Structure formats: structure tokens, C-alpha cells
Image (tube, rainbow, N blue to C red; front, side, top):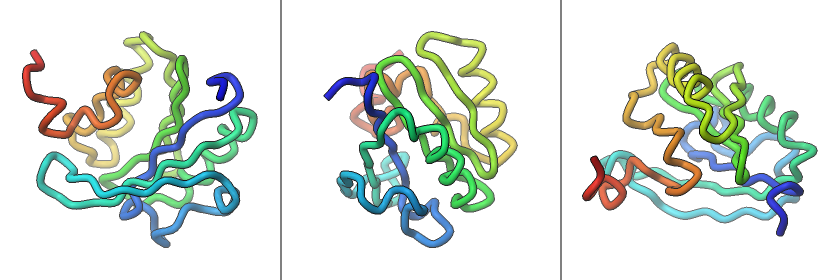
Length: 138
């Protein structure tokens, strides 16, 4: 599967107003699994493989479907991340520190804790907020 052809959407089920991914995700490959947010709060992660050409449109659909505070969803490939905040989408290219800081500033507007917005690490670690990911990190 070429990263240029697809992106992986990572969505917290509880972040969605209707608890189901919005229109456009119904017929795409879905993988669901439990996760402990910050090692404390049990949530369900929904991962969806999406065609890269549809990713911007789907990111906007996610932005419209999110609860109004505390959550975001993201779509990612090897070089780009589309971060859907409530009614807002931010594009971050890998290793672009200014874009990463901008995304963190936007997330703060929605009361998302800074330790849950470790975007720079997400290319290498799916859930950098997980306790096992924090072990041994600087």
C-alpha cells in the first residue's frame, strides 16, 4: 500500500458527536481497538484507511463531526498529517516545527491538553501519550 495513495485516519470514537465516523467513511477499511488515553481514560480508537485524494474532504467532515472541545482526529501518511479540530483542519508536513506549534496552538483553543498533542512523534509512534511510549523518553 503506497503512502502516496492512502492516508490513515485515527479517530477516537468518543470524540464524535454521533459516535460513528461521518459520511464518506462507511465503505473504507476500519480497525477498532481499545486504548487508555493518558493511561487513565478508556477510549476506543477507530483507524480508517482513506484514499489520499479524498483526505482533505474527509478531514473537513471529521472536523464537523467532532465534539466542540477536548478532541481532535488526524489523517497521516509518511510526510503529511491533516489534523481535524472542531470546525478546523490544520495541515502539518513532517519535520515542520512551525506547523506543529501552530497545530498545538489551535488545539489549545479547544482545551486539548498539550501532552495529548505530541504531533511530531506521531509519525513514529501511534499513541505517544501511552505510558509505554513515555517510558525512557526525554
